[in-house]
Length: 451
Ligand SMILES: C[S@@+](CC[C@H](N)C(=O)[O-])C[C@H]1O[C@@H](n2cnc3c(N)ncnc32)[C@H](O)[C@@H]1O
Image: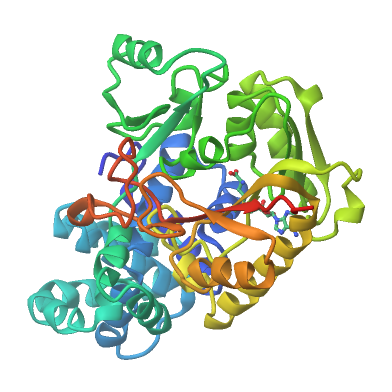
């Protein structure tokens, strides 16, 4: 791993992030706090981010290793330092002895850790001596091997008996960086040519989707600041074209922030869009996104409201199209957020499903006859997906399912794919890449009442 900062500094700065995530904080938030608290240089920040993401991809194994290697539970900060050091050893990121020396150095450099430098040295050297015996033994446990809590493993296994292993294994790899070309500002061939001019290797992976061979920070993506492209996974790019608004339509984007799909809807048509978002801070991101994309704001209204309370935002004119990209467990995007399985509790799934049903029931009456609603979740759990859509149809006799291109059944569940599992998605429209996040889509049409 190339680092423009001393390794001991990287390990020292990464340790408290691990501790925060272990106490229930989201990884992105913990990294943000770490950035605020230290005057870290850019290379140090990005190295800390990489180390922490890598460590989360081994979280279950690291916890199991620490239990075996340390006779007593270490203080949280020491445990954090050991965890990030172990993850680097597991990834063979550095020479073993360099890594151990730097971890010991990191402990020595911190007054409150200095006394534990010998302990850090002993635990890491013990790992190096025993790894050949310990790793195969610990990895016999599926939850440890696939890096999820046992309840998560059981649920994925139950929901996808033929695919559970691939779904979970897909989270082990770094996800691809996929861009959506803004068709208002250019076309995909022109953008690929721009990338070639700047010697950035990329491939077309969808009608408007470009995958960079190596991820780049957004600030270095050509044309990003000018609104030529947005960062959006290939599966997420299916939503707006599947909803297909026409220029004259009124569209409700019911859970809009940060505005990835709002932007796509506004790129594809001149429809009037109400983008509703309950969180005022996140709602600002929708407006910023539209501004960056150069999309006419007069036809997109960003409204801060609970989509489940139409009285707070609806003017009484029916919508022709509704996108409900509902809050969910995010179990389909673990490869982007490896901390997700550890932040959720099993009871969250039912609670989220109840809220999704509430939102569906609340926005359905706002849809015009013959209008269409696309329900989307980035989840692989059936309770938020098939079961949610099936029970909606049972509750609403005026709704019918509309087949989605390439989907074998009524609904479309795309399971996350990567590495060895790529190419086995449950439904693959012809122009969809084989490497994408996990998403569920249900397209519903309101029947026209007969007189
Ligand atoms: C899955 S994200 C939406 C992603 C977005 N559609 C995109 O493509 O960028 C769900 C969003 O819904 C918002 N949300 C949650 N509950 C809501 C509610 N009751 N009404 C409106 N927005 C809500 C969350 O704050 C979050 O920003």
